[in-house]
Amino acid sequence: MAKITVKNQQGADTGEIELRPEVFEAHRHAVLVREVYNAHMANQRQGTHATKSRGQVRGGGRKPWKQKGTGRARAGTIRSPLWRGGAVVFGPQPRDYREKVNRNKRRGAFRALLSSKLDAGEIHILDSLDLSGSPKTREAVALLERLGIKGKKTLFVTKDKDEPLIRATRNLAGSSEAPARVEVVGAISIFDLLTCEALVLTREAAEALQERLKP
Image (cartoon, rainbow, N blue to C red; front, side, top):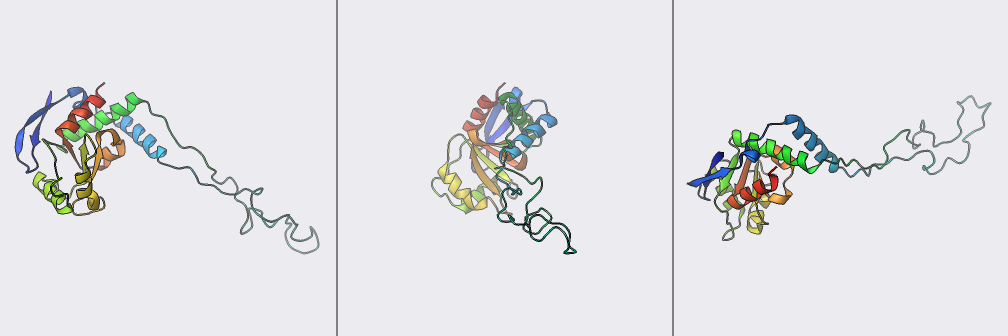
């Protein structure tokens, strides 16, 4: 069974926690991760793109000039796809891009990513996380520095919504110096795990995540 060191907010070791091997020592299934990622990105698309066909473009009801005798090419409507301001041939129409991925596949992809991150040393467990006394950006930056992950794209994961932590990291989402954001266990996506370089979980969040992802 895998073990990982637990730290406090000051960056000091406070003990160890055992991680379930079925979650953090799973098979690194790259194809499965790719499949779930592609489905996730497709599901973000609104699919509201649209172009107008000849029947939808306004105007063009009259033949622009007679068929013969003008020396110009034959034309039946000024809304032809060949004309500026005309219709679009085979253009995109509203559609649903959603792809269904069953729960077992999605959980398997999560387990594969978490196992890879544990091997790479990108997972950090905190005994507790409380910024309610001073929920300021500088406190969040100081926490990242104490954990040795300042400058890495960091994802904080908590069991429940943590308003002080959200307030402290709100200005760091687009930061280049100390990028960080917060999610709850039930809201993290495959995209979140793939794009973060450091995953910081509270002990409660780690236990909830393991319970959620167990086979």
